[in-house]
Amino acid sequence: MNFGTPECPKCRGLTVEELQKVDFTKINMDELFGDILTKAQNSMNKDIIAGIKDKVHRMQQSQSK
Figure 1 (tube, rainbow, N blue to C red):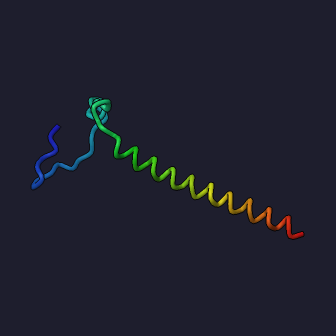
Figure 2 (tube, rainbow, N blue to C red; figure 1 turned 45 degrees about the horizontal axis):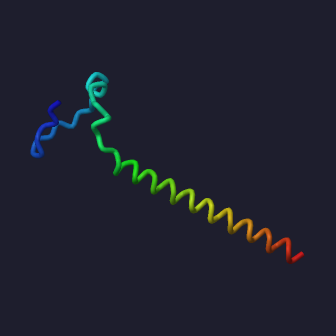
Figure 3 (cartoon, helix red, strand yellow; figure 1 turned 120 degrees about the vertical axis):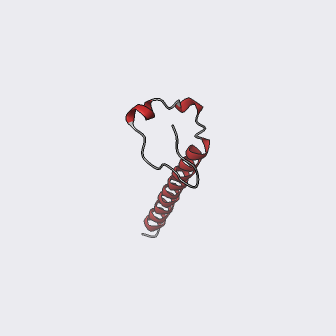
């Protein structure tokens, strides 16, 4: 595959045939998966914190009755 040069890039998409030739086992996806994992953990942490705050609030409400 020829992607051109920085001065004259070839920015077309890959064909199905070209994509099938890619050996994904040779691609280091650590950075991509690291970003995905970090975003997922941040989202889960926000949900957990919101759930804890809600439970504490409900416990406080039930004790004040």
